[in-house]
Image 1: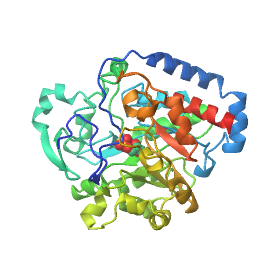
Image 2: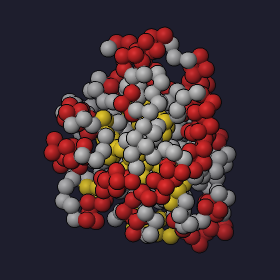
Image 3: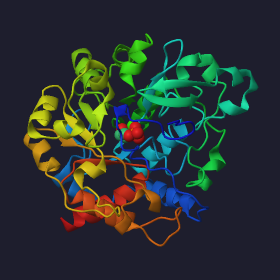
Image 4: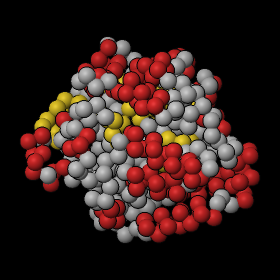
Length: 407
Ligand code: G3P
Ligand code: CA
């Protein structure tokens, strides 16, 4: 299976497709810019009094220093505010912050040939940059086996940072998010160091810590290439004084052994991402560990994760499975079981557009239109999750206010 130009893999075997589901078609007519402007206005004005009062009940408004004091449910800007801007750009991160997201997923981290960490969802960058329009890089296009998946395109590990900096980011799913193409070509690929400097500056401006939630991508794949991620991430965090237990940085990975390795290198809160129930983390495949995600979400598996991590990031389907028609069914016991082991849950990913919502929350047949995202958020919040990754942090924050008002 080639993943050229698509969302890529989750570093698992038998992954049932990315939770992205970014395969909708058709031109959309949404007021994305309007939504963004309204969200930014809400930030300028501050939270409504009801929400401020709710912070006392659900988490401190000043939540620097302790992940347990993050407001709940925590709204995590997935790849920034990627519903409105090309993902993993400083523009996307800035908008997520301006919209009021409690944490920004900045970024998904992959290395360059010369060992720098940059923010891209996948090492393959054909779908998220203008690399195909650079004739000087035409001969870098190649096919690789990435966590068992044949993948064709251009890979960050084949470029120096200086070369990558000549590229510009573009919208990954223009068919679903045509308005976002307005910003194609505007931003570079950010480095992790640039993100940390941006974070520090924004924290100074706001007088409180800005939280970020970087993910280490394909750690086993990169280690075999001599580009181990964990030591590089630890070194950069240490340099910026952000490697402590109370640092405003949560680290995540789909590979449990990567999180175990990080646990020995840094004090940050850590989260193990969990893909489809019948998948196996790629590090397990490589080491011969027979456990699947279905094993890891059992109490014994969760207890094992809790021995080196503070949280899990399951697919939303592990919280509420869907039937064959894509409708939500009955919640699993995962929230209760994870909480029993002291783990927080930050499932992924909520998106406003119809194709990414459960069938029973879609509106009409336009694959590009917004569905009943508020209804879906409310249903997931009711399970007791501690937060959620979303491409639309402004929608998530409004849904959170509704939820807190009613709870
Ligand atoms: O990190 C949470 C979520 O982002 C995992 O999925 O594929 O978007 O990195 P992905
Ligand atoms: Ca991610």
